[in-house]
Amino acid sequence: MALDPRHLSLEKLVPPAPLPHVSRKSLARVTDPLPVPTTCHCCGNPVRLINNKLIYGTEYGEWPYAYRCTGCAAYVGLHPNTDIPLGTLADAPLRAARKRSKEAFVKATRLLHIKERKRSYQWLANAMNIPKSECHFAWFDLDLCRRAERVCTEVVKQKGPL
Image 1 (cartoon, one colour):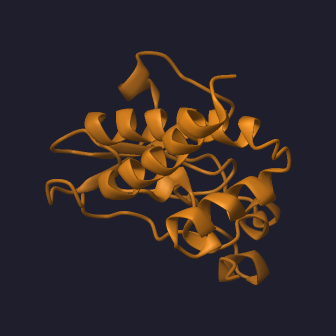
Image 2 (spheres, helix red, strand yellow; image 1 turned 30 degrees about the horizontal axis):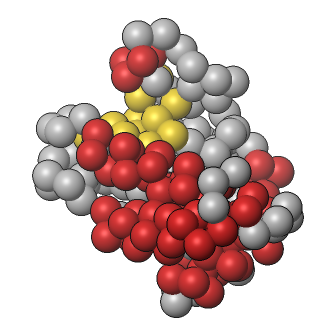
């Protein structure tokens, strides 16, 4: 488990614009933080930190900030009160794949009667043969989304609908 070293820094934290602040306490809550994206892995264009009003047309959430590609408009939100991305940039097809796979995951874990979040992600990591530390839907690419959806859909087929 790695933490952002800034949470222990004695230097003043200077938030990147347009963020109003970055909290040491919030930085310390994010385990295994992903690096700030500077180049889009989808198209190679630069990535900018923006207010999410530019994505949704209105500010959304208590921490309304996101990283967005200047080319293909892939985006990712931020952990509250930090500049740390919640996951990797996602374009429309990847966002749809993540949504489908997460919905299948929720159905499968309900059918398996796994109520605890940690246990449900451990089950999925084992079923996909990936480390639990890498089992985050917001980190999945299209291939991992398809694998997760396939594993979870198989459970739903075997156990029957909810």
